[in-house]
Amino acid sequence: MERKTVGQRLRQIMQERGLKQVDIIELCKPFFTDKVKISKTDLSQYVNDKAEPRSDKLYILAKGLNVPEQWLLGFDTDEKSTPTPRTADLADNDVIFTYEGKPLSEEDKELIRRLMNGK
Image (cartoon, rainbow, N blue to C red; front, side):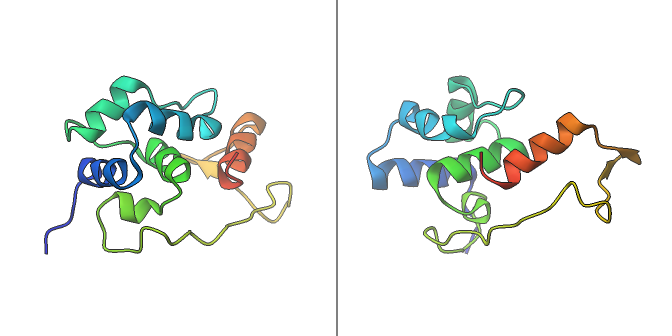
């Protein structure tokens, strides 16, 4: 069995739930950040299989549609299953976060906190 595309999954959800692209954007808005949003153009590209979403935008789509990211990527997981919540205490001195070998800024840590908590 061939893995489905993100576009196929989005079209499937739209059909099953009676959604339009604008409805998906509205469902995803609570998960937008100052730096990461999904535009109408982005979504159109995904739905029409012209582009695949980056991981941060895939996360927002999955949260907005309440489906696992793996399902959106076309893997045979249950559409209704919800991922196990993850927690992290970024204030804990035993936890070290780096990117490209450099410590994360407080702003980046806050963004990670919000993403991990689905805000």
